[in-house]
Image (cartoon, rainbow, N blue to C red; front, side):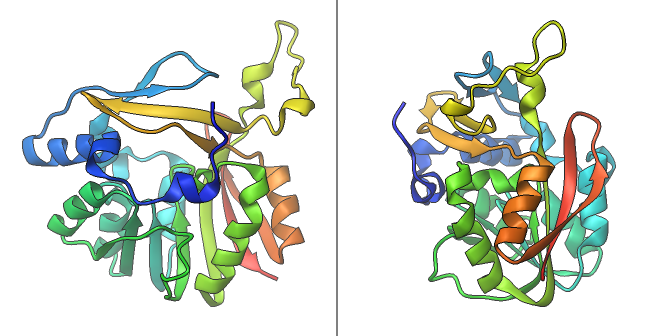
Length: 249
């Protein structure tokens, strides 16, 4: 697989390279969708049930519910998709801007009454300030690889208002590498184990390959502190996942 950069991962998607956007658009228009297929060298073929991308608060996992409860002030919803989190926050009376690199998804959000923009999070032409930056559904994954974390923290500092916060959830996927005796067998020479390659397909729409980062809390906390952030674990999820809150030191 080609080595994919952070900018490659986050570039704005064309309709023919946007399987998730195609799925979101069709589900919004018709109430049904085909399989959104997910491929990776680390896992067997999987699928994302498209209906879950339109879930309401009561169907969200604990860490997402808690993240929404903690949101305050002006909120940036990063990688907002169909806008399920943005809608809940709007219903709670908050001012929300939803951004996504999928024009198809942004079109759906706008139709749902969300202030949504086609924006690459790492694009410095996007200049705005927020009290809360929400990166739900493992939103930190957009950095792709550990080596790109400095770019993330730099952008967070540019986009956060004084006293602002970042709410993000992720997972420690080291459990995948456990042997029958429960020992974790990871080859450090292969890089950080949470850098996962993916490709998606919806009907005949095939996306490009990309890396998505899953980061354990201790590693996130270390990198955050090195870049001037305090990292607090808010809640543990049900399957090696967690919600974290970042604030500038």
